[in-house]
Image 1 (cartoon, rainbow, N blue to C red):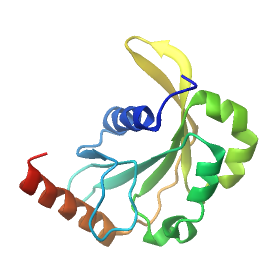
Image 2 (tube, one colour):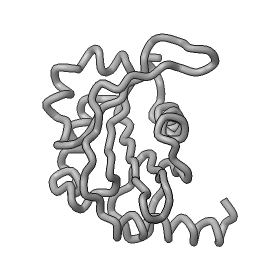
Image 3 (cartoon, helix red, strand yellow):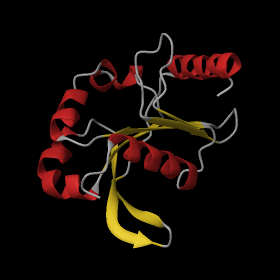
Image 4 (spheres, rainbow, N blue to C red):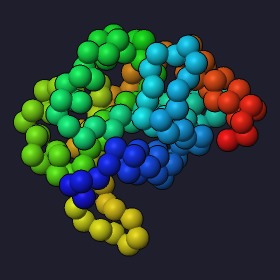
Length: 157
């Protein structure tokens, strides 16, 4: 579990959004045209009138965590996507760096970690800190979705 790649975390994060938060659709590591923010995993739940957007940022190193704090959507949460925003890290990374990570969490961001316990066919996970609902940048979210729709129309995936 310690040497889990970023891609493996992202795939696991997609399953978290689908299973825990009942998000559909869910997208992984997608560029979005003119949108500056590129979340590792993003998904929506609910209907058109009551939908909520969830964002997961997967981190493997403390330096990556610190660099993330300098991004525009971290400095000004109003320009970021997601009503609920989480970091997702391995249990090993969290256990080795918990004192350094917790003060770095942006206001309102939550933290989910993998857990070293296997349950059935999947891995158990742990919510270390719940995310608080935030104002999201609905314009950026719409631009993201439009970009994905255009990509699907163009390439079929």
